[in-house]
Length: 389
Image (cartoon, rainbow, N blue to C red):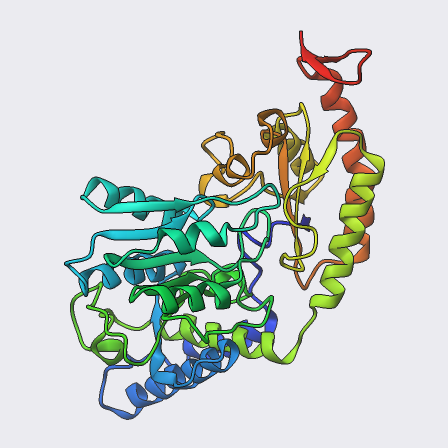
């Protein structure tokens, strides 16, 4: 198998599994228990908290609260921020957010909140002037992503945070799920920051929310006094240990120059050798592992299925909407033509990809595209355009 879908999820790193294993067998206590085994579990959680804080640059380990996933972290950040400011009914977000943010904001519109949806240009870059102009005295929250999960395009969150602080009293939440472990994180002007373990070689089922000291959020999950009384529920110690170990691995073993070189080799090979292939998103200001390419006039789902037959795993966009067969809201916001957006494939590489993976993909893919192009309900015309038959 050639796995080129690392933005959907990642393989648990051997180092991470080794760190987790004792907490799945030998150390099985409840971290809330007062006995020696319970205290051992609690110490493991606190070590993981230190490792997460170190990777993202949190000033204090108390600013890190463990959750079950990035979606929980995003939901808690958004709804919690609004709960602390009930008199404010305005939210600012963008048209290219992950479903964990976009769908929450859609729901809040139905609950009476006004949401300003900020656009992007054809390269996927955020409209900073539009965001600045949208800020109002009743703006409770600005919520944006750091790295787009489909294109890898990066938003200047430090600059956005500065604008928010200078022009309003709103809280600033960043969905950092796709970025952590791939690029350096700067929390200078950030109040709330979400991350997820399975995007950086930790297991699925664990995430964290950074809550800047001085920002108080009501609990999203009510119950016991876990996580300093902020997030109830018996701690998943093995998963939390795995997240800490993954953060430590990301800090000590930066493999992204090699990953970037592999990504560029794949992307250049596709663009040079396959007609009607186009890259989506800023070619420079993006994650080092991500390439979103459209194969015009061909259905992306068909490309995915044919690649799958060769054991090559890719995505047509966010894994969270891969079954809807709808045009990507991100590509729509970038004004990518429908005939190209429907043929988009996201290639997202990781630390376990090799040159051989890229060579195999570049050998297989052109034949697939040629085959599907011959079956397309479009025909070449003399002008060089394609028209539906």
